[in-house]
Length: 251
Image 1 (cartoon, rainbow, N blue to C red):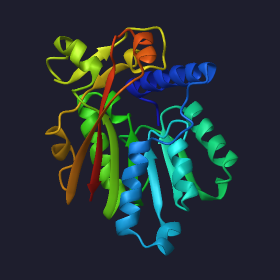
Image 2 (cartoon, rainbow, N blue to C red):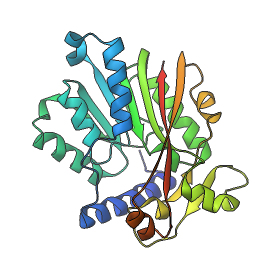
Image 3 (cartoon, rainbow, N blue to C red):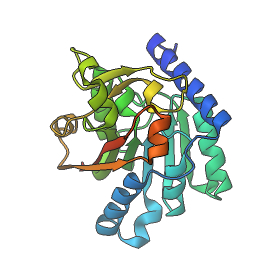
C-alpha cells in the first residue's frame, strides 16, 4: 500500500526528531510517570495478580519504549506502534536490554489512526503526547482507534497537553480559528522540544468525554507543575508551567 503524503511527511518529521534526540542523548529512558500511575491504579483494582501475565497492552506512538519496558517488567505482553522506524528500533533495544524480549508482542511501523490489529485485541491502550500532534480529524480518528482496539472493560490512558500550559497561554492569540486550541509551533531550532514540533493541540476538559464517547467511564485528571527556572530560561521563558491531562477511561 503506498504511503500517503501526509503520513510520509509526519514520518519524516518524527524521524528527524528522533535523530536529534539520539544525537543530543535526549530520548526518554524513563516511563511516563502519570501514565504509570493510572495503569497501576487499574491493575490494583481490576486485575488479580495471577492474571497480569495474561494481559496485552498496546502503546500508540511508543517512541523509545520506556513505558513499554515498565509494563513488560510487570509481566504484561507489550506491543507498540510508531510512525518512526528509528523509534521502534530504540524501543526494541530498550526492551531487550531490560531482559523483556520474551514479552514483546509486536512493534509495528504505522499511523496511530490505522493500526493493523483486530478489534478488542488489547486489555490496555496507552498514548503519551502523541494525539496532540495530529490534525483535528486525525485526532478524533486516533481516539476511535483506541476504542476499537480495546476489549470491553479495558483501560485507555492518554497524556495530553492542557490549555493552561505556558506555551498556550503565551500564544493563545495564534490558535487556529478553524481548530481552537491548536497552535503551529516553530520557535526554536531544536527538534526535541515541544516549542518546535509543529502542530500542537491543547485540550480543554470538555473535549475529552466527547472524544471517548461510548466508554463507560472517562476521568480527565489535571496535573500542573513548574519546570526549574534554569530550564524555563533555556526555553525562552521566565517561568514555564507544564499543564497536562492524564485521561483514565474504561471501555
